Image (cartoon, rainbow, N blue to C red; front, top):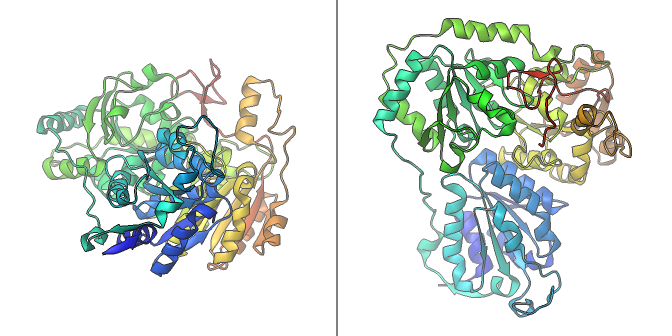
Length: 578
């Protein structure tokens, strides 16, 4: 049986039940677009910048658990994907990226010239450091084994992006295939049994500890193990703190949920993890944004069990951990099956102490003296009013931290953001990808005025596809997180954050695109505005929330000090480098 390479790619994606691909058209992918169109089973979502296509694929992949797919033409199309590719890589999101390349006879090869073909660009060399693997197709017959390997790589172990670059002449070439080539790929599972002695030691450590804490990271969410985490926490009665990428791992109202930890974590959550005597880390990298710069202070007087599918992340920054290399879901399964929880004692005093800390340091009072709208209070009310939405997508900046501190996520609601890459402009296109993955159900996007402008053109994608996204723009007319950094280290010289920076009226921008919009300036307007925002569940709407330009993200770890010491009550002792 003969088939063109493009048709085989399209049929392969269909066989894997990939329902959407994201792209911006260009000459070197027109043949592939046409082939996907002819499947009649895959929706082609045209966006207005390739970076947006990559972020949309990221959002789609996070929610479905299958690779998000994005396409781009050669040259600028391919390079525009790079930020989104890196985002998938650092946040462990499965994705397949296809880039068109110029015809083989137009490629420079070993010639000492910069470029031969129009838009010829070596995307492989650029993307290698931020992908699990890159494939440059040199023969049509390579496409079948490459697709199988690429899909497998994206999904297995620590998930991530794979890129396939295909010259235009090979896209049109014919190959011989067998019917089995198009069958559903059975993805390998990453599973290793945990040594029973290790589990016995862990059980004893839990029993003997007085202040145990579980840190849930992205690995819990990526392995679809939130229910297993909750079951394990309930059996052991261990409180749970979460990283930025695992806010959804345990519902806000669960009695064992503590809160969000890290550089801008909830004050009580940082105190809890800082004073714990046993820490069970599930799928978290323990990077500087989670532990603070004082690593020795973070691990002091703790027994740490670190479970991760990537052995390179264990005993990296935080050393002397008990290493368990495994998929988090497999580990939790084994614990739940093999551990006898009948003689576990509830650490009542510890749980009561954490609850007292919550009452002592409520998130909505960290900025209680701020003029105008308190962003933490607004986020809290937003999530209390948005109980029917499927989830939230946050951009990068102070608003991201306010969201992580104050969202009241319910069971099955999701939260996604750009963490490792920290890419401004992520939220709008990622929310588009998330919305498509849910069958066009309401999703809330939260962005700052700076990040929103990076991919503002995708408002047209929302309008074109009638997506019921609810768009929140927290507008402080500055790049607030960097402005806060300038207050700490540059004596309030606001170059490029307030000086030389400006933002438009987003209410007017949204109306120009045909999206209902509103602006609020005072706290007394919040309830009416939220009522209006969620009134029509099947239509997009934008709410611009004006925030004081000096509103800071507090609390914040005082850089160089232990995780328990946070601004504004503690001063940093060094200039942060991240």
